[in-house]
Image (cartoon, rainbow, N blue to C red):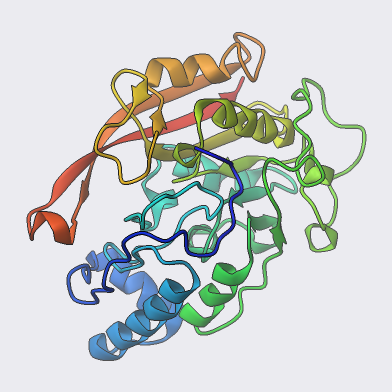
Length: 316
């Protein structure tokens, strides 16, 4: 990759035709979530609404933006994408093995904070709030705000949650200082007053980061891990979690639509955090490879599978 923060304008090359029908498929629980959140209960009206937002989002960045398992969305827009890339983004947060523990943190820990980094439309934060995480303790951040604004259109109503625009590799946004091993000296800031994530150092109870790390080369994945480690609370049970492209053995994924997609294995991912970002033995890393079903118009109507690294890093 050339840079962790390229120009978001079209990079040229092949731009696929936007196909509304091929990807339109919603799992029952996801369809119900959209009905509840949008207030649109008629299937035809819901589909028309989704397709309209899809087309608008597609014009913001020329990658495939479709709807399968709730939504196919652009993930972190700071990637070095050399061709239009197919990206699936369902309600990823609810499928994480530690999700119930995250909700428990929100209910039981005083002033718990949930950060969704690379939050895009804000789907996962809306899901967490709907499932009981206090809305006063959630915050989203991404490279640009345009997709967050489209999320308000998608869900019909504004989401009263702070959003911070910023580059994860900019120290003015997140300074990758060493993680804390004792409580911070200052109380947690009011989330609505923030202009960067730096005041949250050592205060964040849970950080969700899905479809994010694989957008960067190995060195920048480590830098991103350092940045998130700086924000995580030292309190036991605090967790960073998510999912992204992975491999059984660390290396470069062949056949990827983006050049040089470096992917970690469960073992290399654990080593990155336990003894890398954090002192050895101070975190528990759980990581596994799962097969994530995908569909691609170029491959016909048959699903294929992408290896997906599902993981969590919990402070002990």
